[in-house]
Length: 102
Image (tube, rainbow, N blue to C red; front, side):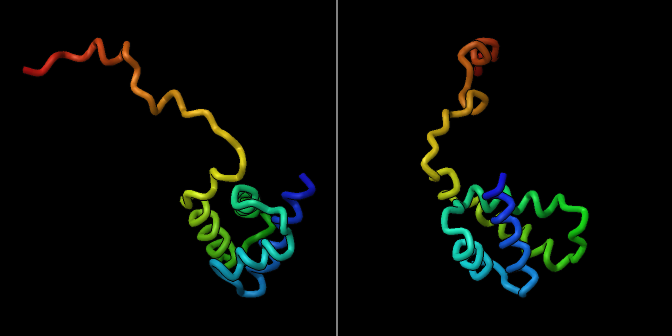
């Protein structure tokens, strides 16, 4: 939790200084070298849920950074092997109940 708090603080500090996009990401990485994209996205979500952050511009910058890095293919490449989601694989049982098209 301590690491996420540091990433969160760096993220908010950088956004308050007017940094956006890659400059903000680089700022966070400089202050928290061990932060991965996944941790930065999680800290971004924490910032978006913070009731004390009310500045729309800061929230927009943090939101844009979170979305960009969440959609980035590299987010899942943080050294964690994830199992394929069972919901994305078609079930044979479900396919048996489908009517045959002629």
